Image 1 (cartoon, rainbow, N blue to C red):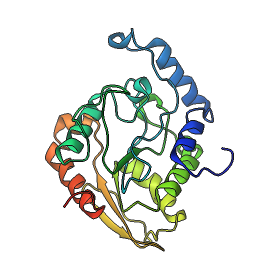
Image 2 (image 1 turned 30 degrees about the vertical axis):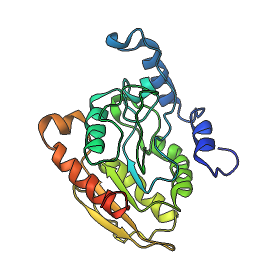
Image 3 (image 1 turned 90 degrees about the horizontal axis):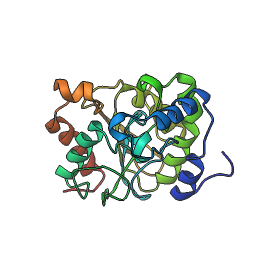
Image 4 (image 1 turned 180 degrees about the vertical axis):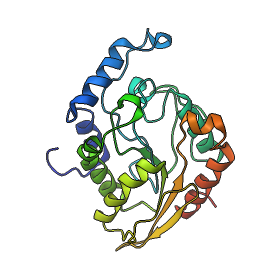
Length: 237
């Protein structure tokens, strides 16, 4: 990464050109060439996927990594797959999204006070990035948190991988992470003191099909966490 980034547009422009992880570059481009049969007539994005949402968001949602035939295809976080369908339906239900569906860039979807990002920005094989790939990608998350920090009030982390990836980033950004570090769990809520204001950190099961199809994560469960985090962030009453 070049000069220090001070705005979201500049961050996104640099991020989508990243080729730091050879395994991820090879995989994301292979998937984009070969495609899934049902999307054979589409042009895949096949690059790192930037965060999605306004630069003055007071609530940040942190996932894991783009899905091979979801965000790696469409170029937008949680767009074009069933995990995204589940997430955006819940965001719309609590008043944080303009519509309940996310199919492609330019579909009219807007987020209200919410930004979505991930600790790894390229689709990994088997949805499992390596620790080295996570660490290679960390500077993008550092930069994004620094840009969002003046407005940020709460963070929802979807899954244990994102939780463990985010805690050291929050610590370095100036929020006091307890020792020992808080454990991930659905419904976990930790208030982290900061120099300007506290940050409220929430845990939520990931919106993976494994969780949503089995009922481990229901719409009501997700909407409950979203509503609590949104209230703390000043987005809903």
